[in-house]
Length: 125
Image 1 (cartoon, rainbow, N blue to C red):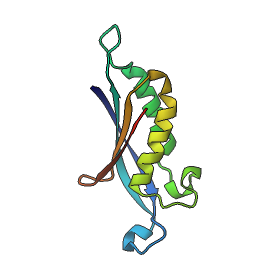
Image 2 (spheres, rainbow, N blue to C red):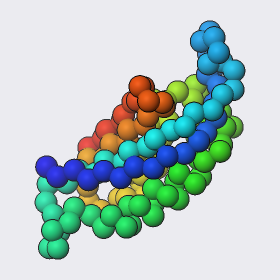
Image 3 (cartoon, rainbow, N blue to C red):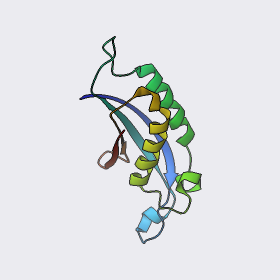
Image 4 (cartoon, one colour):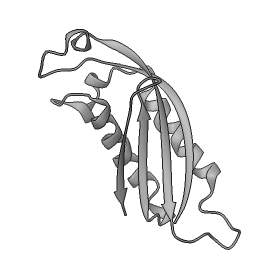
């Protein structure tokens, strides 16, 4: 299985709801790093997994949509805790739809919330 990864960074704000997490309940900012990992069994006739320029374009557009936003205010997070795990899930759903034509075997979104904490969500397609 081949893997191809592309990464970007963005800033967004959030606050946790539904429990007592101290300072995490107060709106604050994170400098997120998102890693998009694409998996496929075979390469194309040129020896590529996918057109990386196309993937980068989608990644840049999605990151621009989240840049500077307060996650709690976005429709995707209505009524749910905007945890890093849920952010990874929502982003994976967005990329799964956007990259559907690439005929991937699996798609992973990995998000770093800071230098020591990350989560990922992987789905087979």
